[in-house]
Image (cartoon, rainbow, N blue to C red; front, top):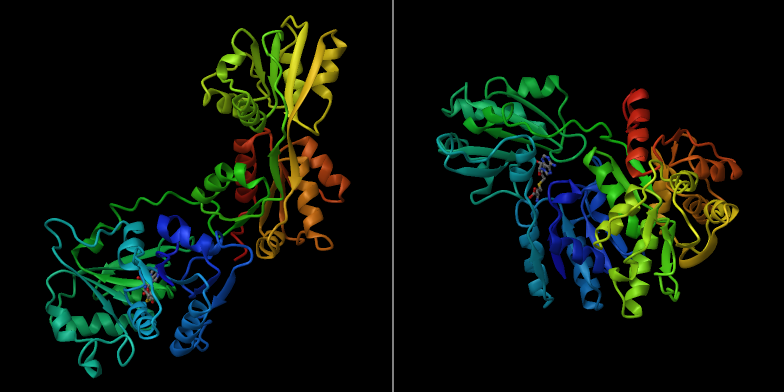
Length: 498
Ligand code: SAH
């Protein structure tokens, strides 16, 4: 049984340990404040149980949550209890740990970045700062029973908080901003002390307002700030403007589905995430290296590699027969584009021929002046015949070496449902189109979903399936896809739908 902190919202702030446990869990019990992306790494067959408060409605009672945890753990399941921020900071993680101990269940606690530190950092507010603040207090704004400290009835202890010599960070105070500020002032805290309110820190909806204790609640009200938010009082709040660092996030609030094979998806996914998108990974295909025997390469004038996958498969198969990069010595190496050249460079080989546009027709052109008697084309088992046909037409002896195949990959229902209703879905090859739509059938993409295609071949496959690409990349690579999507988002800026 693992009590795991999910951090303040940005999935990138989950710890490595937390991610590993989420990926391994049979059962995950999670709260509302757990960022949407945090569960992406869960197993498709994991049991996901929501145990938080829904809107203004009732929370799953704490006792029931604890009973569920204990029952699943005693069943021998690997159970993750995932909580926003840090489990031991206003998270009732301590109570849950006590319940586990009482039931004789072993547990591990995985700390998380608490909102009072993480959300404020994203707003450019350091909780301590030399010369400004030498102490920080994390305070619950809730009075009464559950989260209150000693002497429950009289929490918050305004006289003590007013004289605290450092930064005050209030959690759970969204509904009581005016009361907090005025109580602090009434008990002697300076009216003009800098203050800030940070809403949904680290999440796409993050916003910050600043002011003083006297003005902050009015400012927050005017900006319609709502939970989850933090109120910070202290000189450090005045740094929020100067230290604001979060780059503009043009895709904030938009959901983008990525359908390419999981092994290749991360570069695209992380670029989209940096731009603020919420990425749904719905890999529709997987690649499998074939048991191909790579012939002696020296007799060939040219070896053509038509994808980064072909490069990795070639080196895997060379290694299987005790060879390495030297097998390419003395042969001209031509690649389809910059991505394939980069994959090759990682293995210590610089491509001799790289066409400007990463398509077979451009490679044919780039090879026009190269004398070729024998050529080897290393590629996927199923591919267009443009390159071999063109080279044969000019009299070359062409051998095609099928190094890998792409196979349809089952998509977990959760990801599929989210992909079908995403703001954007990206297709980076014809095979992802076919496999994705087959996996979804009889359902299809929602009518509001914008379809992004990497290029004409992929768009043609979409058309065959009765769908029209709304956006087609000008450059037929990942950068081109991102650029096209950004341009589309900017041109349609009535803002995101959510
Ligand atoms: N265990 C959590 C806190 C849970 S209490 C942690 O360590 O962060 C819930 C309160 O946390 C909210 O009412 C709000 O005050 C604060 N909070 C959580 N996530 C937040 C976020 N992304 N931005 C601002 N405040 C947040």
